[in-house]
Length: 257
Length: 305
Image (cartoon, rainbow over the protein chains, first blue to last red):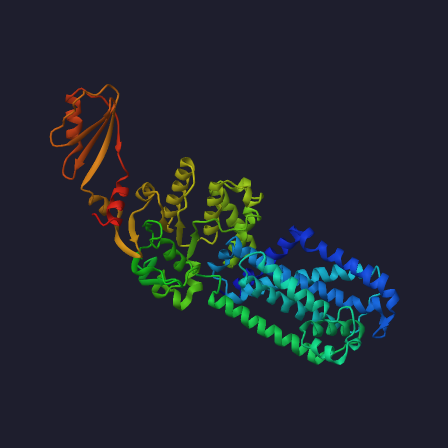
């Protein structure tokens, strides 16, 4: 396939993915907006008003970056895992497998679909947050780069989950029992300064700590961990996830007989 | 001329150790209408799966219009359109989207993809249904949708795995007419089917596969000429005599108006008509007792012929 043909194939996959989540927007876009609004009301307004400052900001300002990032992570992941597993489940993945589309184009198409949903929901959640607090942007560059890197990383993770999944139960196990706990323990709602040294060090093993703190730095200019380390960790995990996804596609594991 | 499909010593052993293909070799010429027949589990779908890359071969080589799949599978795939046995599209998507997207996967620009989708959805009588979710289509319509999808990039080799399974007779006939037109226009077609009448009506050449091996590979005409005996059923408009005897032929009276006559190779059916005329039997119609190809098929897979 020429590069022009590959681009057409890529855009076809991306368009299909966007159309899919817009068609079922009540399942894909609305829940995040509602959930995050509740977080803003409960943790930001009701409880947050009694907590006082954290990291030099009001508690509401402190949790907003984490909550936006939480929406990006869960939506990028969910989009790819449910869409790709769905195409495996109804065998429509064969439409791609019999075609001459290179594997990396298939992967990039699905990942980009997940990234667009992550960004879409991030914008919705950010707009919702404006009803509760003022928006601070410390560094647009850091915000944009970290949002893109994070959504790519978790879209890739969703892809790997989808390849291994055998049932719809399998696509909800990781988000429920791995992703959500890591997000909650990743410093969305608290500064790691509050933790005893031991637990603060344990927390540094959680990749979500780097994601949330890098994004918080981009918005507020404060972070519990080094920005450089955060970028390096996210980049490292992205390369690993991309390489493994390509390995799965190239070997046809669980896709071809 | 380069063959449309060349398979040499193709083997497939699945992870559980089952040898689905045991070194088959096959050649399909350009422009042919080729039937791949065999009982369930014979290896037909495995062969098709390997051709279109859904199944990884264990050994052997396979070329499509001279392009070896081990050297440039994407180039080979561009030549192929495949209609699988099972529905394999997202049933929540509209027919038009399914076909246009498939064109996109082959690198066709969007405008051209839409034109082609219109062309083939109209040709297959689905244009009026293009905007409804595909799950709302009837079984026959879903099969035609898969044919439109397979044709949208205008492949030179169309592979159909049991395309008329579960389709009513009228729809089957119209699909046959459509496939004949596509073939006449130059598309090579490979067909697997359980309806042997379908293979006899459509195909020029045939391969019969059984237990992962090719047991026959010849023209349909040559295969049928191997038949040693055919049984015909005669329907009479008047009542048959109680004892119907035709010298040299095995005759069985089924009821007052139906007669079965076995005609051996070398005998002439005219003799039967002449004898029935002498007996005063008014023949209203005559037909084969079984599909001729079916008889050959049973003989071959049971090791008889």
